[in-house]
Amino acid sequence: MAGLVAGVSAFDIAFTVVLGIATVITMVWFPDIPGGTGGHHSALTARFEGADEGDPPAVDQHPTYGDAAVAYTDRIIDRQLTKVRGILAFDGLILTFLGLIARGGALLDISEHHRVPVLLLMAELAAASGICLFQFRARWGYVADLRTFSREIASTLALARRRSFWIERTVRLSLLALAGIAVLIVATLARG
Image 1 (tube, rainbow, N blue to C red):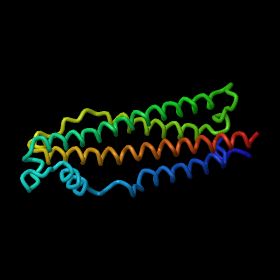
Image 2 (image 1 turned 60 degrees about the vertical axis):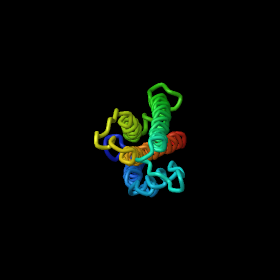
Image 3 (image 1 turned 135 degrees about the horizontal axis):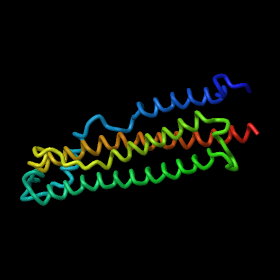
Image 4 (image 1 turned 90 degrees about the horizontal axis):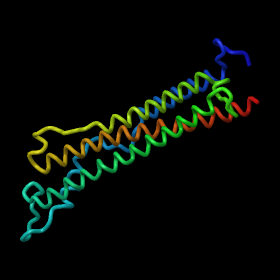
């Protein structure tokens, strides 16, 4: 098949267009991330409020319950960071694998026939890794958020929501890149 544009095949162009559309859909469509955290905040604070002489005290008025609720929300952030570490390791392995099969002299050199798609897949993996690294930023928060347990919980849940949004994006980008690599391997093997 003759190249359409300086060595770029019709397959490469189609792959690039499909990958671009899939990436846009991946970055925009998120049905699982809640619009806000008010319901989560209410459910969490109710969980840590105990019965004290008939009436459950508010989390802000009872330090033991407030500390427990804040510690729980902090564990949510810790679990998210653990997920991000796993995604970074996965992306690193996939990027290394892609680099190995896309170099001259490799048993299966996919870049010989599909240079542009390989570069795009590497860019997707690098973008996913960059988003993951961004999640490790130190965050002190605002002083006003530390005045009451409820405000600290609300602030931490809002952070968890934002991080969930970005973690979901990195997972989808990583899976999309993995699927793209599989398609390129099959296309290269089919080519001969």
